[in-house]
Image (cartoon, rainbow, N blue to C red; front, side, top):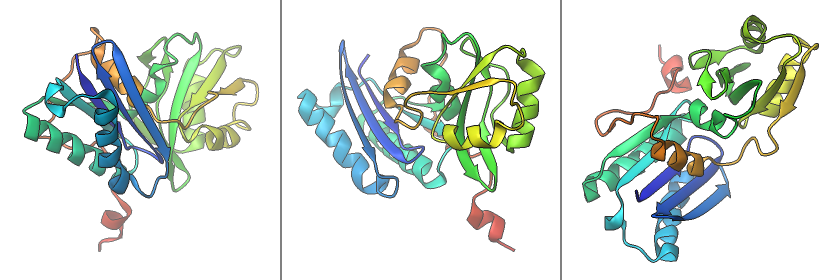
Length: 225
């Protein structure tokens, strides 16, 4: 299946294009310019692959949580392309995607994004399966969730752009556990979006009439009186 994948959920912008057995990928670490760079990246990948957009079978992007603005940019681009080309458009929960490449890790996997206000967007996974829902949670509450499900001897691996900060916050709360950090926790995950979309074990739904999952009101909404 020919797939275009967009990850605009966090600081690192990544775009992946999969055509038959070949793939192309671009990643840019510039969180303030996703709206400027995304379509240029998409166009460059099509030119590099020497293929026209009408050869695509689907478009996929991050569902959330993540940057409010970034998610809207990704959804807008994905829906626009899908509508113009008559394609299905899919979204994958961000935390699922962050944890996906660590599905073979035998211990606990914790993806995280700094949600500000001393909280993190996070969830707990083991053997590729979620143990919790998608959380907007404080380090103290997350430590409590970890202690509920994790054996004392188990090593834990943190991933996602919030991994390093989260480690500093929860290390004193679960000091008896070994906390490891994914070697590239903050990289873009457009390639994982393609792998998940191609998985025969995951049922995808066309989201053309829906939008991002934010899990929290924006600061603008919270400041309205």
